[in-house]
Image (tube, one colour):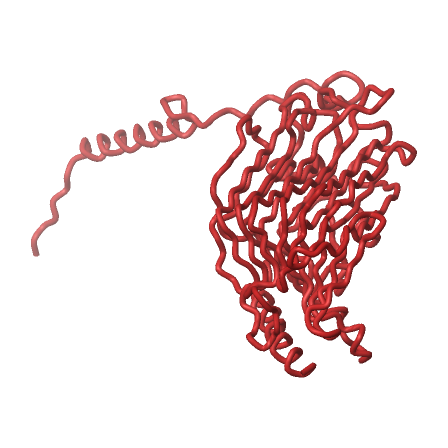
Length: 447
């Protein structure tokens, strides 16, 4: 029985790993540097420039399927911060993704604020290309109005979506930079979701053909903004990820009612003492065929539900909160940075801890609902909302040298220097012709 369960699922997982691995994204274009190290950069400030420095991003996924978790290092826009975060999966596939990013130090002005709402996405070794059908808004320039619309429904054995919509907005003030509200926000919402809807027939999941289904509205919201620092005149960077759900249904007649959805926030003030991570853990009520099985909350984060004897088990787990904090120096400014990840609900099918076999993954299938990640960084003293003139170029000491006399332009009339020579030669030639014509002509005698 164990082999009959493991072989079909293992084949499915291998097929899912092989398909995205072919679509590796191309490497990003490096920042060009000058040939001469003493020459000015490729671009220089022109006119008044914002004083604010801020880096932050928030990402929320309605559903994420992971293969080979913690297999590759994490990369991030924050300097030196990826080494402190948990490693990413070898391959990930997400449905209903919303991300908001702010980076005032970006080389390209169009990358200072980037917001995206995607119907689906995948990442291989931590690299995630933009998928078709994604709503994107970038700043500069400013976008006073959000971009909204329906997202295409992907056809995949990993999941099915219904009535998926997205909304994105990226703002930027020409004088104050990131000091504008709203700054970066992205949202995805759907009316129905099914995950692992094409499981092999050998897997005994009674009453349903999909492992997880969300029959009601499911919404993901990500935003980055600047907020007031209590007792200070400057701003803090706040990255927030929120979820909204009503209920979740699992195979085997399991129902999960969302009493309280999760909220994850990272606030960076530039100072370790006042920077913080706020997490409101979800509260979920679990029942099976109308029978109450318990409540998942911060005090009771895990619950095992057997579906068939002790071999087929669904493991439910919430939170999984991981947070990191550290000071940094670089990327144009120094200050304090922090970040965190959390999940509303982890569902593990067929946990392998009871098999007592070495070198096995934690489960044959693992799906996360409500994936959340937030990161924020602020300079020491907070984000300054103001404008400064770029420094004027320095003048050399002493009196300015007199301007050099410009060389004369080429003549194009009678004053051209070669024209007098031409007429002199012409006159001499005419004089020679006249003299030659005036001389008597001598005829030769015939012999």
